[in-house]
Amino acid sequence: MQFKLIGPAKDFKFACQICGNCCKGKKKGYIFIYKPDLEKLFEHFKCTTEAKKYEFAKKHLEIISQKRAYKDNNTDVKKSYYYDTIVFKLVGDNEECCFLGENNMCKIYSVRPFQCSSYPVWRIILTIKKNWDENLKKCKGINITSGESYSQERILDILKKEFQLEKDFFLVMKAHNFKIKEVYPFLRDINKG
Ligand code: SF4
Ligand code: SF4
Image (cartoon, rainbow, N blue to C red; front, side, top):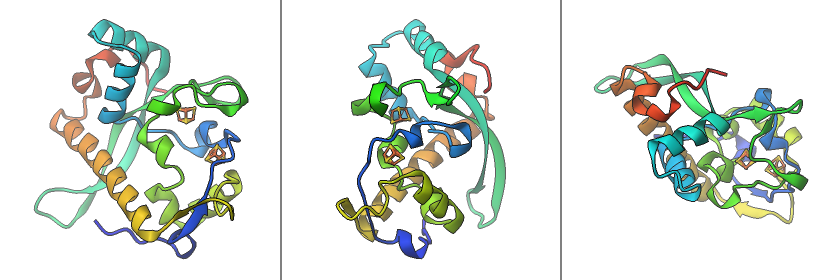
């Protein structure tokens, strides 16, 4: 998989300023939760039975639909698919992630999903100029001189991992005719957000 990074996103510095902006607001984007993320969370919260997983899901998870384009096997043609994904609930007037704590600290920092730990190194941000510019306004940690260096090599490694997580999720969903509750039975009566 090739990623066409926009100029300023090829090599930049970043250090989180703990403003909490990236943990709030539907319009600013959702955190998608993939299977390895769920496994970490279930282990952390000791959700060892389906009943406990259901309890966790009821409290913290939501289902939303997304559209993604994929190439099917043996073809170079991209096809658009609409399918359901898992996200954290956003709560309150500010639409905050249900795990955002006081002083913008993440309550599950050590087991936060891949998307949280990899922000702002997301394909959708680093390959589309408009999104990069929007995130520059939203996140004061990007391009901060005292930040950690993100070389092109490091960025591409993270993007490959992101792509693989998305692809694995998509392939499992496709194999189950996009019936998310068949793949994840603990979502049984969770509504679409
Ligand atoms: S928006 Fe940027 S600075 Fe603010 S919490 Fe998120 S990563 Fe940190
Ligand atoms: S899990 Fe933590 S880092 Fe991720 S969006 Fe929620 S509060 Fe922010």
